[in-house]
Length: 156
Image 1: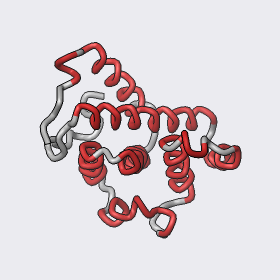
Image 2: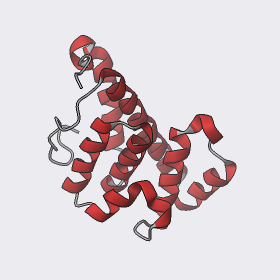
Image 3: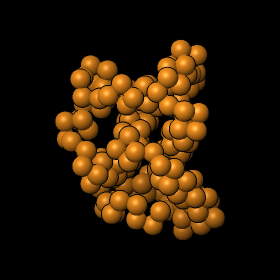
Image 4: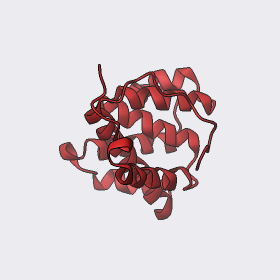
């Protein structure tokens, strides 16, 4: 697979805008382990090999277990995730697949039982951001295996 273009080289302002959104998400105070679960799960659904590779590496670098990473696409059938993580994974799936069923009132009410409105906004923005990155990476054919993990919070 050959990359089609490097967005940052072709249109640096567009790339910087995405990076600003990523900076917001990384600096929002969300738990880094939860953030990586969101990123991996959305990337699995979208079929973004580059992002799955990147965020699996980042999750490992953040002390995530191999077992949880491997089981993430079957999270409903495992005991490996907390109730809070499960509701976030359900929201990640609903938003990523929004054209199928939208976000149900039941799911929205459930997430509200675990998180305050400001945390819900931060989770929402994390999900929206990784979905945007997935679409960029898939369209421009970013090559998996070319990413090296950075120290946590590097540049953020």
